[in-house]
Image (cartoon, rainbow, N blue to C red; front, side, top):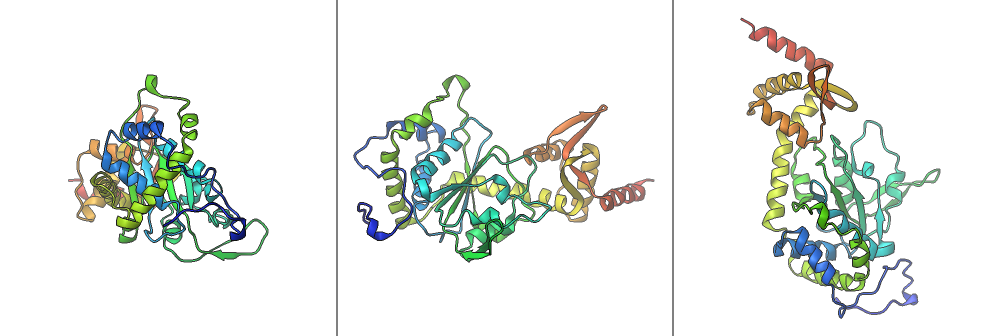
Length: 332
């Protein structure tokens, strides 16, 4: 890979925000990376390869990257910095583009992403579910159809890498090999104390964009040499996520209504889970563990008229009857 100045005779209609500068020091960037990764050099090297991969028009890794942490940990700064440097090559999409919906989404949500090499989205909502079919489609390397409002459909092959950051883990309706291959959960576990947060960090990093761009190019070279090669921390976090999703996700798919306007008593939810888990030869576990898992999924606990409930979730009418029938059979 070699670099040369831009040439109008190439007829390239996009440009980055800055030109790379290998001589520019990037102390703010290196300090930032060291802080948010807890001085984990393997994780820093992986993030550099991810950043380098985002420079390319290739999606051969068939991957999406979910930067997850509880908040105040710098993950959004990472995404904003990459997108800022990439300029015309980066697009921001609403998070709803990649979330499941009861109603069919308009194809305009993908039309504006044509030609991008990086697409970013922020702030995953509580209790939402990935649109797994769409994620597989846009990361699979095949052509997709889209259209702008009141215009004809057109076909394009996505080139963009998808980076999403959030404080909540969206749910999976199923844990299959295709999602396991695609999904990289990148843990941002270091919380920056409020008194140590730098509100001007974005501006300081912008002054280093040219040097950070060179850092990304070096990451691209390393990606070309060894691939993404996620470190043990990313592999473990991703595996743990799928383990969390598997049984609870299948129970929700079979027995529940996922709606922000719904709510249900937590004891009723556990009775349903207990019935379903026993019927499917799954480990039931303690109620406290089950409730903790629901909260990890993003469902908000509430107390209504003295009864503990969860918002955003309810049992289907069929499941209510199943639970009642199971209770009747178990009565002496």
